[in-house]
Image (cartoon, rainbow, N blue to C red; front, side, top):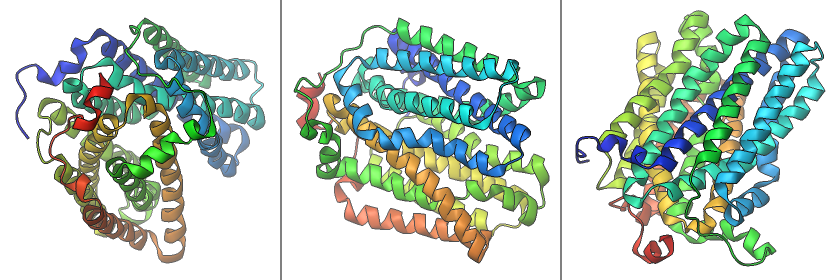
Length: 417
């Protein structure tokens, strides 16, 4: 790595469009976290049925899975800024509906699940649009900086959002939903204010071939295939987060407050590394940094699984989050740079489904293994598996491993302008 010039850590914010996009996306992500916590608490308060808690995540994930081919195509054919703004407006309406049924005392599981499906649908469309929009708002030289800030904002929202949601819910469910409505509405306004971006749109007629173009590109471009599949299998195996309640209560004897520390540790490590990367970007040996991040992630998972000391466990989780941020930073930048603009929506839609599926399946893998062989062996298996994936992918995807700089490849330079 090389030190950037003074002020370079904020290079992406020199562009008004990106600044508006950043704060819009941050408010939307923060609001999603508040709604997720509030719905979970309220659902359990009202029903006392833990099974419904599992359905909350399922109903929000299914639209992304079922609409993969549609959402990516829409992001490549139409104005990504307006897609995101419309989706934020729909999210505002959904949060307002949750607020209304709460105030009127009409809360019941299945109407709420219907709203969550609508939430999941708007996120299925907004995700590829937002991921593909960032490269349209900054020049290539500032893209890695923008991605570092995007990752940092997501980590902050993921840490602070649930805490804020819990505190607001303590004041009443209406307080949580009202705040979410305000944040979604502000995000909508900011997104509308983003200047019209320069977007290379898909101009050919919609056909099965164009719809499947994202899958076809991923399978033929080894750099993108390697980056996405690496993320898929590492997340699938790295299921330590799902078992944190077991470690907090039964292994480390920490109680609820300790569970909060365990849950926060990976995010804190990720934020620290994201801020460092925004100031000290990776200039050379990007592929090696990415695989080193995956390897450190696996090692820290292994340490966490074997540790009987609370502070060693918390430190291991912080290192895990920081290492994952290095890998995510390089992977997301490579996917953005190596994918032609007219295909970014479809490629990001596939990527989102892979990440979402691997999270869901990763939690299932960890939970089922913990049930049969115990929590410690389940986490240790994940750590060893992540290390094995790093070695196998480094050997199989030589081009990905040996990539030096995070710049647009020569064969795409003309197409990205």
